[in-house]
Image 1 (cartoon, rainbow, N blue to C red):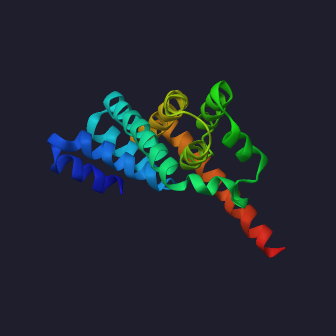
Image 2: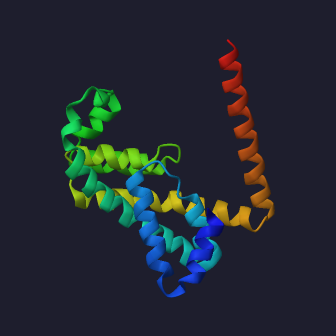
Length: 184
């Protein structure tokens, strides 16, 4: 997918920034598609700093648009059984500083899908302004880490080799654990 995005950016070079941001908005609305391929394409075409900045802008704009769409379309779902988990209830009921802190901290955790955080925050009582600031501040360190990792792997530096090795070991252990669990 990364190569297709690079080709698209190069074909429509004057509109590459807009294409990247629009793609990030679509990824954010879908909520489950990882954006790492788009970050890699941005880094390959625009360089590290411009590519990282473009990914940040795209993810921030995508989160805001997703928040508004989710709030408009799914608000009635907040009373359903799906939202009965304590952490979800807490985010739904949170306002002000508590809501800000929750979104900020959840954005900093790389293993929590960003779409879920946006979805639950949109169904809750959090204001758009607080969500925008908390979400953007939380995305910044996570995106810098993602961009750095992707850049190192793309350029196959020693850090990229370490990142790839750690990822491969993690993937192997995760798969092995699943296989062992299915046998029992």
